[in-house]
Amino acid sequence: MRPATLAVPMLPVRRPLTVLAVLAVLALMSGVAACGGDSSSSTASAPAATTVTTQAPVAAPAQAYPATATKNTTRVATASSVATAAAVARIVFPGGGAGQVPDAVVLADAGDWRGALAGAVLMAPPLRAPLLYTEGGELPDATKAALGALHPAGSARANNAQAIRLGTAAGPGGLRVTSLPGADPYTLAQSIDDYRSRVAGRPSDAVMVVAADRPEYAMPAAAYAAKSGDPVLFTARDTLPAPTRAAIRAHGRPHIYVLGPVSAVSAAVEAQLAQLGTVTRIAAADAPSTAIAFARFQDGNFGWGVVDPGHGFVFVSPRRPGDAGAAAPLSASGTYGPLLLTAPGGSLPRSVTEYLLDVKPGYSSDPVRGVYNHGWIVGDTQTVGVAAQATIDGLLEIAPVPAKQP
Figure 1 (cartoon, helix red, strand yellow):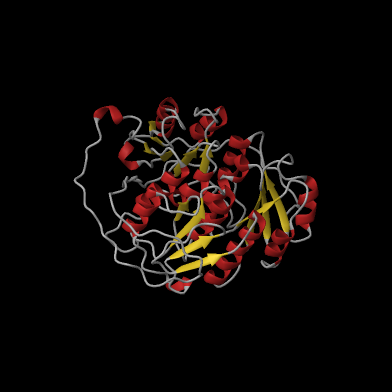
Figure 2: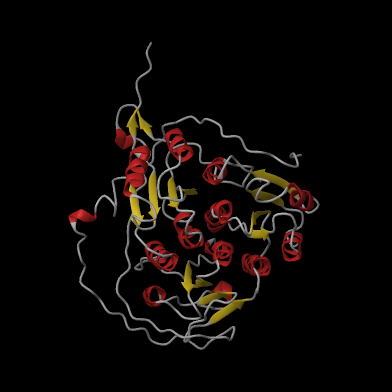
């Protein structure tokens, strides 16, 4: 029987040597033209023909590095969450072979980071639908281009829908659209959770509960939702909203994981949650440390359990909470791995430095036989600085392990 509440300590970890090399790939958006417009109906007509304009590849100038990429990092150099979502969708689904094109996409309003964060769960199997942003009832150019390039054919699991519209997000004309309602973050998250359970054929055994007004503590949940299919539900600090309570009840008596300290989700809410399932709180001294505690955490089948080398990491600034849902597909594909937070000014918190040292790869005789870490840097250099990227690169680098003295 699990304890009702658990504070997760920051524990040192071993640095084992295993045999597997992980190669990170970078695919950038190509120029395309796509259809746009709004659709208020839940299902639209078949997609109109899409015109694709091929552009000659342009080599990045030498001065673009190391900001563009280093030997262990790749930057998604975007100035907004709208651009992040479009770029990440194209990185994860570059086209060409099986699994390289999504059957459907998720559309979220750019002004609602909560809807996007909850919608990240639709990237998990069986839908595997990346998120794109709409803005002010329209499709931004970046979203239009991504839609044209991705050209989702429709998901059989989603009644052949090509797009899943969340809340007040715009619905593009010419696509078959399923709309999930919700005028507030609690109701929308409940709608998303119910939809995902129906598509998957059953509700999950675990749910994550995060504060609706503390994005810095909520953001890491998006990455894990995209990987696992466990939903993200919202609460007020001192009161558990009725839609969240109803959503949890639909899971039976699940394992409930609260992300964040009592300053974000109070002990009173934790007590209310304990009436609905088994509650575990994952928290540390601050938001970056809490993201690390979540990255280390494992409870049966739940959690990343990243306490050793050979993983991917996604670095996001807390100044751009919309990047959490937008970048979630990076955590659910390729090198798979948790979301970590930089400092608001774009530097690297000490706790993140110490964690990356804990999971730094090593080799005893030949680095080719080692394992490798990789980091995705989300945002332009004003969001995450080049100095922070260089530090991350060094911390991810495989290093020789001194031989033990007899």
